[in-house]
Image 1: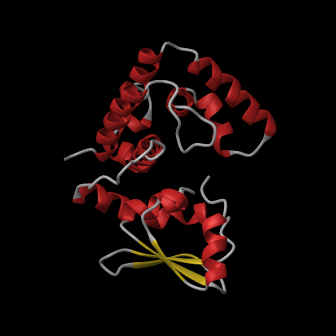
Image 2: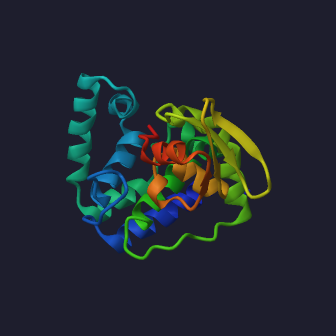
Amino acid sequence: MTNRAQLERGLLCDELLERGPDAATLCGSWTTRDLAAHLVLRERRPDAAAGIVLHQAALARYSEKVRARIAARPWPELVDAVRTGPPCWSPTRIGAIDELANTVEFFVHHEDVRRAQPAWTARQLDEGLEAALAKALGRMKLLLRGAPVGVRFCTPDGTELVARTGADIVTVTGRPSELILFAFGRQAVSEVELRGAASAVQSLKDAALGI
């Protein structure tokens, strides 16, 4: 069985090496070096990983301190740490858990590097990856908590998902991969169609979505 998380991990690492350590990403002010360090911390430093998602000042400061130390490694070594993945004791070494925990993570960050570059074009993803991302859409509702309006996701095959309830519903239509990027706050580079009241559409475009 193809492990989509591992495929995206490898493609991301290839992209990182091609772009070098100082290229822009879609992760705010982070460069590719910063992003790579984040991924290593996430998988290899559970003591510091809590600061990524928990909005607590002390945890965030510690997490950033550890990430900065990781980022200081030589670039090829840093990318190799991303490619090698977590230590042997990590549950994500198990294929099914890896797919669940990492397919979306590595897909989004791969696109963070790709779509931050000039003249990017969307990849034609294989059906297996699109299907895996479609399954993950239902878990993305928390990412829409910053949306000021209701959000309905719709895929080209007509499948619909109410991602956030609200009085002013905006329907966001696109491939599952593009809807995932939209939910993670990459609205500006997501190839989707938005339908709804003009003011509601604009407020969703401007909303702070994602983690």
